[in-house]
Length: 134
Image (tube, rainbow, N blue to C red):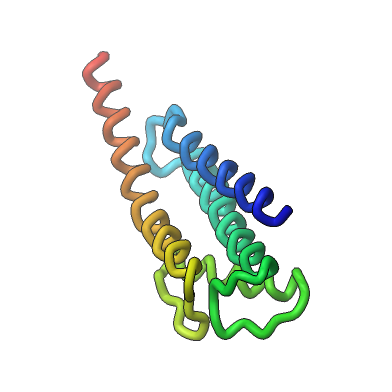
């Protein structure tokens, strides 16, 4: 059951990023609407990666050490913190990814760094298209 939830989580995360890049961005790069869209996607990614780590740990697959939390919510909150550190700063310090967690941490760090660049690139490309159409 956990692996089915894991697959569904990855699917939701993928659709979220895809939807963000397909948005018709407003004329201004820094608008509330654009900020809310980006915040929504980062929230989905953050919860998604935390869910992936939590599911792996609950399924008995060691993904991060040292983790001494018992029960779903304490473990989920710790993995939420770890996911935020990997997604936003690539600083994991006290919690270290191991095994499958290393691949997930690398993917999380990659997405955390490439997503803002991709969004800005998409906005610039769409603004150039609008300029040429006028």
